[in-house]
Length: 249
Image (cartoon, rainbow, N blue to C red; front, side, top):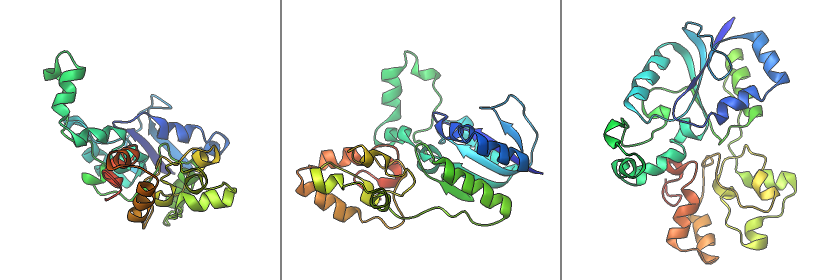
């Protein structure tokens, strides 16, 4: 039976909880794999090597850096799950400034804090077999990824934008109809256009789509009255290191 391991680095645990939220589907997964290491669900620490490792979280400390190298050594396949693991996450906002200054403001004794200057995705340090985007990830996509690796094939995950999901759901375009800033045109699908369905602009939780036309979106947002500072802020959320400061990465 294939061995599955789930690992946590700097993150909120939301993507690991997505696996637990699969509920009935999780029973089918458990019937096909030995969930050998998953501290979010069990204190059991089954030994590797593992056929598939799911990794949540970014690399933010020297200990993280050494631990991810170990995870890679004991894993036949390594899949990163969520914005933290694939793009550095919200914590990558610190990359825009001096993390030592942040530590001095937050902690009474910052000299006790051991941290790297940047919050980086897993792929910056070890080879990754597949990246599953989202904050948090979508459970249907997660099940597809697990099933694909069990079957020895490439996962089938959509590469189109959230706008396609909006059309499929029948949502009016919030950008056109009400001038609401929305990252849907440049964001990878996966959420089911959740925010636009409630008249909120897309926040870019799933990161940039395969071929984003950020320049065109930026021009539209500037025409709606946004200045460069405002434009930078809407991109600086869950996937700041992927989108860049204003969608230019």
